[in-house]
Image 1: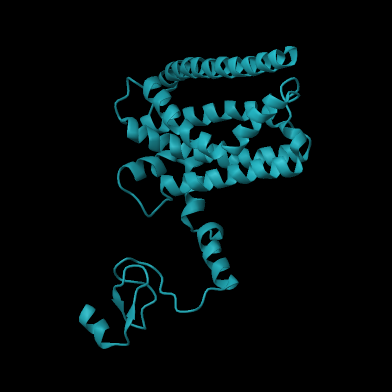
Image 2 (image 1 turned 135 degrees about the vertical axis):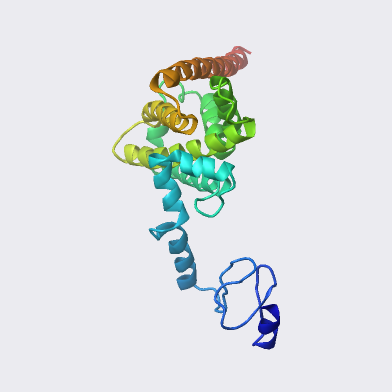
Length: 264
């Protein structure tokens, strides 16, 4: 095949440098589409629509299937299926992008939705919350290993997944939640909702969606699932309590420091 290509009009794939003929629309070696035209807005829109707007694209397939049959996406990726659905890194990146847009939009146009009475009145405390918003994406990334560890501990009696595979599970689950919550929180802010109040409600839905996914992934009965959910809730409570205590200590310490400065 390569010899036939070399004897035809010469063309080389821009992605892998494999020799192609002018008749080929896709590279036989890497599958990339052959692009001869100069980059313009039409081409950019075509690529965008093929990735996100086409009904048969992997993003929509991944998004809808995670609701209807999450085991197809997650177990498929773990077992080597890489083309049918969007891989976990790409999916997580899209989720982070939407989350970043959500924070930018709320801070720019609806800052009142981010107000927490009794907390954001203090300048130092405002600085803390602004830092959280500034590093929202990084915090989201760092939470995935925590979620995976919590899932590993919660389902310790189920040996199907190792820790790395739990990372994949929680990567998909948290990305799905992030996309949905980002959209809902923006609409909630537009209609006067509070980011933290609505967010706490959505956190409950996140736990329910996580339980639903693990029920299907591990093929649990309802009674088995309830036992693991109780364990997961217990672990989550301990982790959240630790976060609240640490946050409170930081806020109190900063408040005490400010009081000391005023006294001096």
